[in-house]
Length: 403
Image (tube, rainbow, N blue to C red; front, side, top):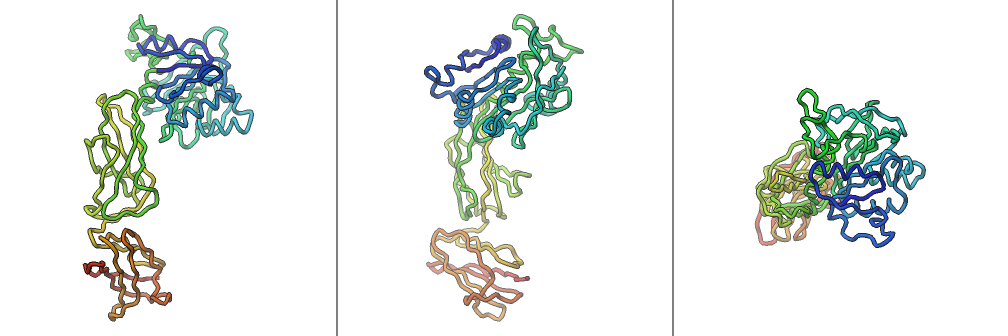
């Protein structure tokens, strides 16, 4: 656990309250003004900018490099956006790395409310803030970028904190002072320190622990199949994981043919060896597909990564699938051949109107409904089949052209 920043030492007390070890490091070391620290992305980083602190250009570069390597960051500072919002590069940094699309400065707030169902603050309810003596309230309202999620609302019912999870990094950013959250000392039981109506107080320690639990999940990046490619017969699902607890990860693989609205389990209890061979011939249908890989630790903490869309076919060995059917403009032949093959198309009178050589390894051919001379075919019923180089002939498939 690494902690660095320019703010007060309130985080130290919060770490102590939850019994979490940490290493305080000055920001001037982290930014390389003296020596810098290689391999920082292996650690959870908590950066507190305090009452008036922000991120200068060197600090922005450090944060960008850290998050760009898959880092996990908890950043707190009610005036961070004040400095970033003054320049185009600062706004770009805020959008790309803090996932803030806009800001309303210094609105102030008497309390924050956790967003219902959020894994970080969903159990918070309304938390009344008490700012330290001499500590001004410069809380901002944030316009959260579409790729991030609001986790706290201020007393204007607008976001003042967010979280982001992606393949590249994981972040919690608060534009409200962490120092204003009540703190239950480690020596004082939480149930006797500010609990109301039997509900434990959501305090600085609770918040810190909740953020760290959410940030510290396995990172999964799906590397295969390649986006936009067509796969028949079989394909390899590839992934990379990163988890700095050192615990053994167990892999679950799912796929979706409706852009992630529903998922079908492909494999569970797989070893984290980065590769799984998927037999596509057992599918009842194909189409546009995405794959999700989930890595789980023994402590029930898990993280997921999702592929970019690709195309799968349900064609068995030395077979093909054609679609759409009926066709109006063009049709795709999804082919699963053991080597070279030839597609043939006949009209209902038994005349061959089109043929096409399929090279070994080719899985898709787009046909624009023309004959061998390149002229459009008339509407009607056509018969298609494929013959492989070693003489295997498929069953006849009916294709309807209807423009």
